[in-house]
Amino acid sequence: MSKLEIQIGRRQALAVLLGQVLLGAIVAIACLAGWGARAAVSAVTGAGIGIAATALMAFAMLRHGDGASLQRVALSFFSGWLVKVGFTVAALVVAFGSPKVDAVPLLAAYVTTFLGYWFGVARWGGPRSKQTVGVAD
Image (cartoon, rainbow, N blue to C red; front, side, top):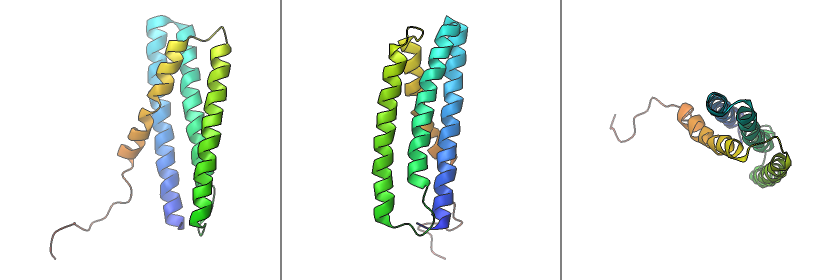
């Protein structure tokens, strides 16, 4: 991977994380307004789990510098995915085991963070080119 590709990947990952933070905050505020502080804290917990899992995956995928082999990048992707899934399952088990957490707001905010992936892609569509496809010069 080139240095430019790594920089683009890091920007895309940051856009996804910022989108997840924004969406998680919206759900938490809605829970606070509609059901109170306990629901809001549960929503923040759910969003935090989703955001932390995404950050772990992004770090695992993008930690290598330029010149990393495709084999190394692929191994990082799959190991990052395993860490993400393991962390998510463990964090959800701990959260659901707490008597102070409401399951519905937690799950609502966690699932809402998935929309952050689309926000990041929409926000950062990749490198832009002035070249027009299909038009003769």
